[in-house]
Picture 1 (cartoon, helix red, strand yellow):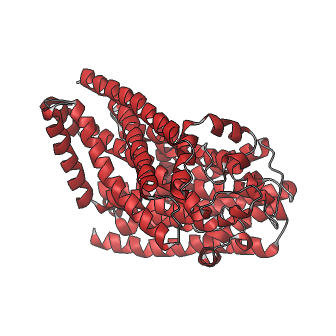
Picture 2: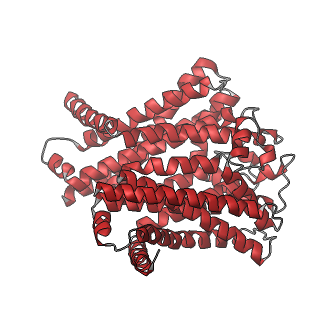
Picture 3: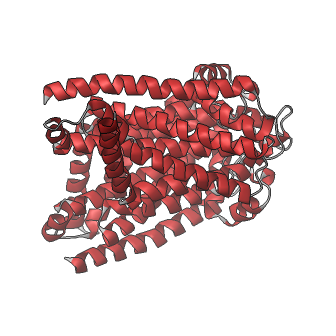
Length: 257
Length: 258
């Protein structure tokens, strides 16, 4: 992306951020849902740490915090996909396509907007978790690694959703944006470690790339990372695939005019 | 009386048709709770190893949550549809006709209740297909369907109340996370006596949604528990009466404004 692309990205990100700040109805639901999940999972299910074989050193609050953080990152991206679809429905995105000197900058701009929104959610989640007494076993680098992993998940979420939004260009494509992400997230060791999952969900979770990201995030928070390089490699591979997906979506939108 | 029934029937039919014509309003409420049921009933199976857990099958335990979640989705549809009627001026035009407020309110619930009934049959059928066992037998299944439809009616009435107070679809949508919050802070995932965190257990105990879930759940895993059933039906009836009462007051105010 050249300087003109950067200027497009920054301009669009500024517009997205301003829209968000001026519309609390767009800001609060994405903030509330991760918080509700966190309270419901960490508060309501904490007895699961007594299940034989549950051996996560950070406790159940930290165990769930990592999942909800990554989930909020992924859905932060998906929610921005709804915004892109809405922009196509009301004609704004088509005007953007005509006006932007570098159209790839549009995807970057939407992502920067999504990062801003997710950073608010992540900050709030972290504060609530710390108030709830979540221990942090990892050092500064580990914690930075956890948030970097979450940022990459956010990027995957927005690139995936942007690809759908730009191909279908309607808000009605919302379920197509969120259902695969939902399935990817929940077909992983959400409530208990992988070893405690039984049946088909264990087999699926073992193959699910998100499982490694989740387990590594938990490892980083507890100060016991095991597969950091593999996790980041998978995260970057997912970013690569979804980047191609979104750029092809952009080309599809360009062809549609 | 027959005129009132006729008016209710016409508005209800319009509501049913409008809901049926929106795949986005029908498919996610049907499929999303089923997906969550599939994932959670396996992902949380380890919970059945906890001492005191009331059943060996987490699917049996979790199935009732699908009815609650589906009803909440149906309520979103009812609320958003009515808000659209307010937004587009349909309610204003209706105010010029001899249509009675009660007919409008009860009729607007038609689509949501039809969707709730369809969901209840689908969830029950899927649950049975995947091995859910009712300790109360066929009678329990029929009672569960009755309670599930009553709960759908209750949530739909809450949706109508929110729509009349808010007046726009966007505002209605923005208030639904609060209802989901009630569902999340309940005994949906574990029995209340097994919830370890004190404040969560206290909130789940004062949360009426817990009693709706437990009323449904008792029919599957426990038996004819009169107290749980009385609380389940009682809360559902209170929801219907309270929300419709509030909605009729809100409707009067909205008609005066227009």
